[in-house]
Length: 187
Image 1 (cartoon, one colour):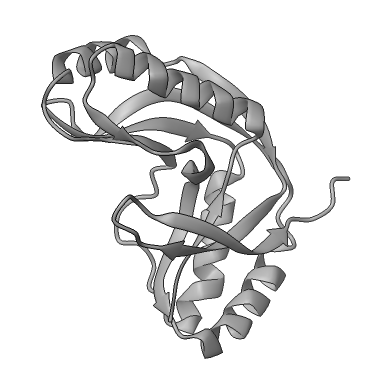
Image 2 (cartoon, one colour):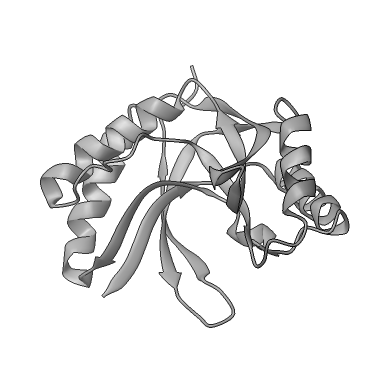
């Protein structure tokens, strides 16, 4: 079995900006377990545990289904928390780009007939920066989130999505890229 998910990652300069934001938040006293730089990503769709025999059909479907999508610009902008500001558990940065909904729809169209049901929640494109370990610093976090509603961490050109394998470990998940699916060549 392979624990798999389809994701996109921002450019290296944007990742550096996100790491700097994590460091700033940590210095503000926020008690969180921060996501490592190599694990920062947007999950387009989580597949869960997949039998290895199913992987070729999934890969073929994604390759064909995503090949018609045009590359798009993705801006990392604004900080937020889940589930809400009264009980912040997950700190995230918002993602904005005209191609995000097309990517999510194309992925759902390919994977749904293969037995991967569509997500029931609304698609809220974000990258998780950290998970709160305690309530220490929660008040500071809420203030920072409110003040950072439109803060931009940079823009990336997204021209492919990647299927990843997730290895769950006590110190955190390790993500291994399996296959990249390029979008249509730029005109």
